[in-house]
Length: 213
Ligand code: SAH
Image (cartoon, rainbow, N blue to C red; front, side):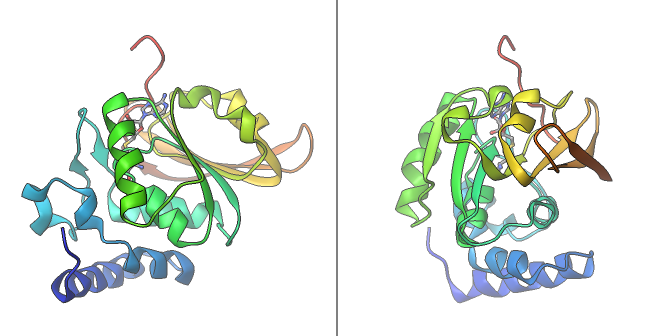
């Protein structure tokens, strides 16, 4: 799918809207203005790609709402060259936004179909994650830890300890916590065993699946 001036125009309108909704980080807005969201979606939905809504992707999952992507990315405080672990690759859209911001991204997806698609598709678009893995996000990815930031893009019924332990000191975990709805929560590692916690707004994500589900 091509990226045309029409897409660019719709994207600019969407980002003005997201800014009005309260996203302040220019780095986030700039990255999102560049990534062509429509190519991450089913071609039948292309004309809706620049609406501020989530849409279905394969394996009964969703591509997150652009405002949610912006909100989570802003909370992550990404800087160029940061090492970021993303849990829930899904369509790869959020992965591309992080790469566009100059981050080195490690991303984990629990559904094989989505993993396979993203692994082929992201490099084709020029968005190459450092590493992409088919696996369970509850255990993070210890081999490449510690991370400057960890971003969970599915609703977690509880905060996995492994994710906290894989943060650098000063690193941030952005995670929506809850079952039927989630509270966006940020943990900052302030010391070897100390973390600070801050809660933000209410969101609705697809669930972070557990091994036997
Ligand atoms: N970042 C994605 C959001 C996809 S929705 C995007 O922008 O498209 C959440 C994703 O988390 C889904 O792809 C789902 O399959 C994945 N997921 C669910 N449970 C998981 C787990 N335990 N480990 C890793 N990924 C998981």
